[in-house]
Length: 108
Length: 125
Image (cartoon, rainbow over all chains, first blue to last red; front, side, top):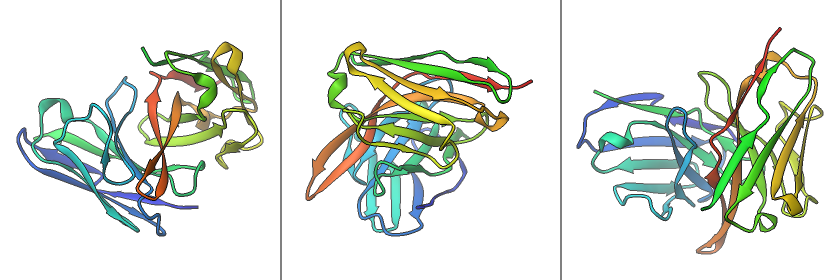
């Protein structure tokens, strides 16, 4: 099974900060990597698919990069609505997908 | 409006059974692979099961294999999961999610683009 490891597990930042979250796969997954945002009591939201493609309707301050085993999600300038938990997901071993453990982004 | 709405959650004793439902609207349900994903209290997202558009391809996470059965009724635009032999560790919010497959460069990329709000299952005596 492919394991996904995110770092950090939690992060404190301020509005306007640039934030980067990383995700590492236990084996190469090419560009089969998605990023989701999840707020308590809400449905998870797809942000980035195929490592770097922005989902329709998602603000351009979100970007993704990477291939192989190492990936990053970057938020260029944090907004108040961005405080949430972020998950990476591999879709290489489709349809037996695996999520990372999550990164909780909190207000400093 | 494209929408998924889960229902059927509740409190069940260990060893019991329950069926969750997911009603789809606003899109051609029969064209999409569908998934169940869960989140245990204080934990992250865990993919549970997946079913193809025509029900001919079904997969389960090892943690539920042999106990859960995913199914769908395209005529009713509905997705289901029958959960048997429930354990305390099955306690979670259960989400249904639409699988979208897109060609990106030279690869077909899968992702979950539409999610429901979730339904809570509690397994406790």
